[in-house]
Image (tube, rainbow, N blue to C red; front, side, top):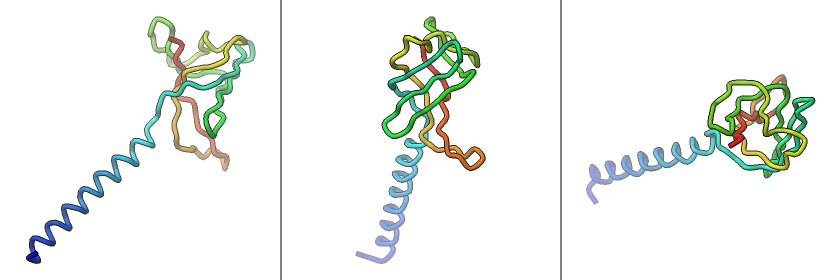
Length: 112
């Protein structure tokens, strides 16, 4: 194989590797919706959600989508109460460092 053709092929393979690597890496970092077991208290406004390897939590206020599809920027979702056994939550798969403690925040709750 001539050297210029070999060099072009190497550059092509490198470009394909970069595109695939970026695509696979960035999709894992994107927030995603997940159905999880949940325990909640509307009175104290606290909820916990059990993921496959993390426990996620909410206290006080969280963005949420109501039964009618309306988005609420904050407040307490009515679907998180003492009868709650599971919830549909938007989570970030990346750990966020808060004063030396790693957390994975719940970005929103879907009550539909």
